Every structure is written in C-alpha cells, then in structure tokens.
Length: 247
Picture 1 (cartoon, helix red, strand yellow):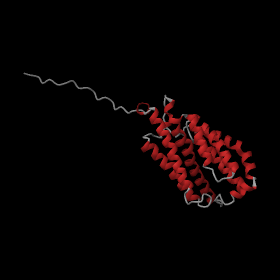
Picture 2: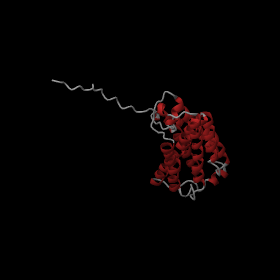
Picture 3: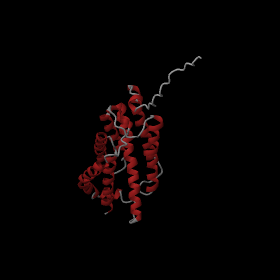
Picture 4: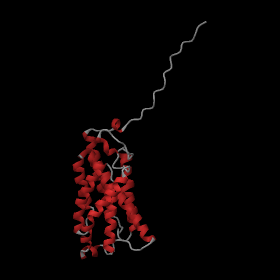
C-alpha cells in the first residue's frame, strides 16, 4: 500500500511591517529636495494668505479658517501624500530620522505647560512697554475682536485654533521639513527669518521681535521634538498682548 508523500508544512512567517528606519530615503539629493519643497510650498502658502481678501482684525473667523486650511490641512497633505511621511509619534534610535514626526508629539504636555507659562511671563515686561507705544496701540485699534462673555470665549477659542495651526506650520512643517536636508541649525534660522517677514506690516518693534522669537521657539521645538511648547507660549503671549492693547 503506497503512502502519498507530502511536503512538510512551514509556519507562516509573521507579517513584517517596515519601520521608518528601513523605508527612509536618506540620499543627499532626496533629503535636500524634500527640504527645498517644504520651504517653497510653505512660502507659497504664506504668499496666498498675505494676498487673501480677508482682514485679520475685522473678519477674524474667516482668517482663522484660512489658517486652518493653509497652515494645517494643506501642509499635512504635503507630508502624507507628497513626502509619504507620517505625523505618528515614534521614538527613533537614529535621531536623523526625527523629522518623520514633524514635531507632532504631545506626551510631555505636563512639563510643557509650566515651561510655556514661564516663558510667557518673562515676556510680560516687554509686552507691557510695547503696548504703551501710541503708534502700536493705534495700529491695533481695530485689530482684535471685541465683546465679553460667550463672545470672548469664542474669540479665545479661535485664537487658540489659529495659533495651533500657525505654530505647527513654522515649528513643525517648516522646521522639521527643512531640517531633513538643510540641517537643523539652518532650518531654525530660515524658519525664524520667514516667521519674522510673515509679520510685515505690523509695528516695527513686533516684527523685529518676531525674528528673535521665531529663533527661540525653533530651538525649543527642535530640542523637545515637539511644537507644542511653542504653541502654548505663543498663545499666552498673544493673549496677554490682546489684553494689554485693549486695556
């Protein structure tokens, strides 16, 4: 009686998911082009906002919505679909790959909250002196939306949304995107310069302060691998600025 021979069965190999370290295209040309695209696309989005027929201090809701699209949704699409990267937080052994996160890390928020409050408090004396300048007050006379109670809550919420998108654009998309090919010191300087010029048309003291502030926030974001402290700090400073100008 013959017995049919069968090949020994081999257990299926476990599904292997490629890690960023394995998929990362680290050729000099690819990294440089990705960084250059981040800068060019970012500049184009800022130019579009600058030329948008929306008055920031008058049409605050529409200006916030524009920021959501231009400073958040569209850059996220660039990261996902053009760069084929992700915002999922990962602890990478090779720190050269940390731009995969684009600063999208919130796990240290308990430490970032008091740190941002301290930075904001340190700026209060400078904000107070600048807010007393008649030229500055005149420039912002119609800038901030007025109203109290529920209206004030809505305005503060819009401000938080606006600055969250704004900070991720500069200290997330631009900073970490450019750092891939330009190196992180150059990326910090370039995003700070762009951030400063994004304040063109504002009082000179604010525009000059934006260059320095952009550099400081860039360093903090890079060291923490997160833009969240920059967002919180910018929010406290802007909120204090609103109150000092109005009162």
